[in-house]
Image (cartoon, rainbow, N blue to C red; front, side, top):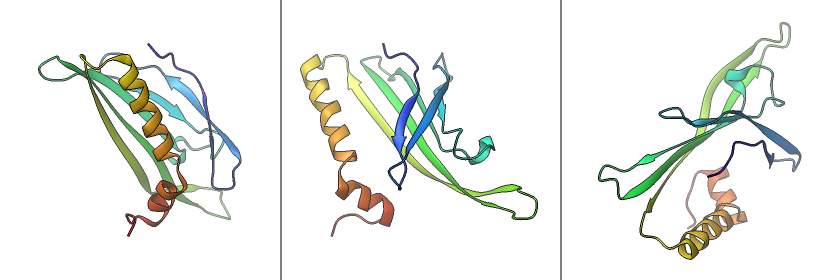
Amino acid sequence: MPQLADITAKNAAAANVVFKGLVPASGETPALWRAQSVVPVPAAQPYMTIGHRKNADRSAQKVTGVIGVPFYTTEASTGKVSVAGTMPFNFSVTKPDSVPDGFSADFAAYVQSLVGSILFKDILVNAFSAT
């Protein structure tokens, strides 16, 4: 079972940003990571949550998560940060108990590669599918 750990990601300028592992998953509580170095106000920090549970008929494990990047303004005279909204990336994976490890390893590699591709990045930035 994966253990909570910090994760280093890249921002648009290709600089490393550490998502600090803050809360491990437990029961109904999802694991939580925050990029605390981006801005000191927690509500404005990029975050990721991931939870897991068995599906309704208990034949598969379901993982759901959100990567959220709030957009905000900072008042020049006071330094007050105001969050205007968040861009969420929602994901869900259902792994049937009968899936062999080799197939789930390929699945993870495909997803990691596809989501990390330049085309997928362009789709997210522009909010349009490939045409």
